[in-house]
Length: 88
Image 1 (cartoon, helix red, strand yellow):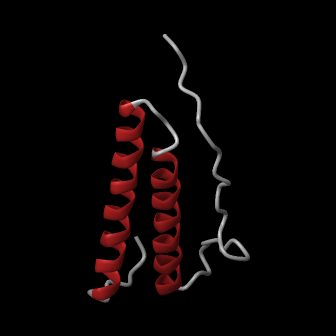
Image 2: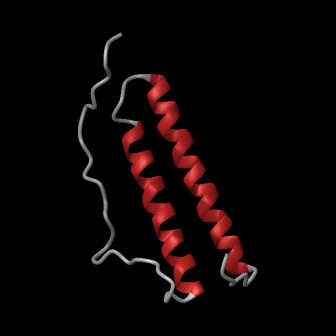
C-alpha cells in the first residue's frame, strides 16, 4: 500500500496572540467563548488540510472531521444564545 504524502504543509494555527487556558477560575461565559474559538480553529485545521491530499478517502475524512467541529461550535453557540451558563 502506497503512503499518501501531503502536497504542501500548512502551519498549525495556535491562536491569535496568546493561548487562553480554561481552569476552575475561568468565568463560564469566557470558557464557552474559548471553546467556540478552539472549535473554529480545529475546523480550519481539518478543512485546510483536506485539499492537501490526492486520496479521496483522506479528503473525505478531513472534511467529515471539519464538519464535526462546526457542529460542536454550533452547540456551544446555542448554549450561549439560550443563556445556559452553568458548570458541567
